[in-house]
Amino acid sequence: MSAELFLVGDGPTGVLVLSGSSGRVEEDRCRVLAAAGATAASYRWFGAEIDLVPLESFDDALLTLHERCDRLVVMGTSRGAEAALLLGARHPEIDAVVSVSGSGVVWAGLSSDRPQRSAWTSGGSPLPFVPYDDSWEPEPGADPLELVGMYEQSLASYADRVPAARIPVERIAGEVVLVAGGDDRLWPGLDLAEGVVRRREAAGLATTLVSHPEAGHRLLLPGEQVPPPPRLVHGGTSEADAELGRRVWPELLRLLAPPGAGSKTVDRSR
Image (tube, rainbow, N blue to C red; front, top):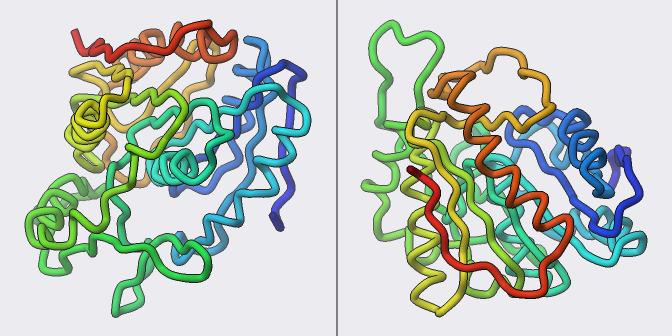
């Protein structure tokens, strides 16, 4: 881990908080989780681009938390949630994964280079991925861009690549909490989350899905500051994003004060 780790709190559950493609260090979210009893850490987990990021590069941050804490949770947003699910499948010591507006498949890296490459590597080898369909065009004059159509078109255009690119969520030994807005306009977050639920249910594994039909790609937890305007259309409203945060908050508190029994599949979209 080359970036400096922001770490706050001294609770028994360590939470590694991973941002999405904004690349920001999630200091505000870490402070909110620490105030609720966690030890929370965040850092900028990629360099100039999300492109061929080694999954091993998260090991130092995970180890730092695990040395301090009895339990380990990874909470990621968007591309950081993609990482969180991959890490949960890779590390049996992770007790829970919280995927906020995440993806059940590996995507290409966020790079203008062609040919496209995977966003992730493991053991030096790129993971199978779904490419972006470069033939997609936004609505004329759209500014800022809404990308959900591009991701939907890419899933359809490269349907043959999807099975190999699926994140092996069936291998996640710990709990999985998925958070998704029904009005996500960056990518089809709710559809992707529901796909994860179906695959884990087919494997007999419990999963919690927390949703709100009017929330977008971003989540606002109780006590968090409203983030700056995004570069891309995220959908939702500040009120709905905050309501989604209130809905998921009891689940986060439960993970910070671990129960004696596993979770059941729950749909809180209503």
